Length: 202
Image (cartoon, rainbow, N blue to C red; front, side):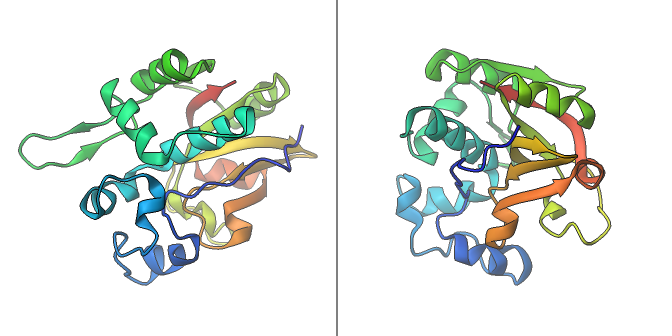
């Protein structure tokens, strides 16, 4: 099943800056469109924008369902209230997205079905998609350059939205070009970046 009309949301306010951010040392917070994210101020945007791929996935799911959705930072505030992100008291390091509290937030506040899958082989993605769900899937961030060997698995979230003829379609919140933000890959290539865990949303 394919979802070609799914909306695309990036975790950075300016999609055309993503290539510079991820590959050329551009500081993520130096984004002239930062306020469009709903961040309360520039400092908050600079601190959090690299950590909100999960919020971008959630926003896409809500936009697809409702035609509208809270801003990325409104979603972040809600997720943080449920414990989906934590900050280390000593180092201020951000930990998240933490799946179980995120799923609780998605269910309680947004009325989504949200099931955590700690073990979700790539072959099962089609089953969930055919059941009308989408999957926030943990992949390596370098899935945006699938012509290169995968340097690892997991650490970044994309929204898997459809499948067809042995390929999967997904939206990547940190895709550095249009074709990597709205992407399609053979399932076996996707699997080399995929950590086999995620959250099914419906």
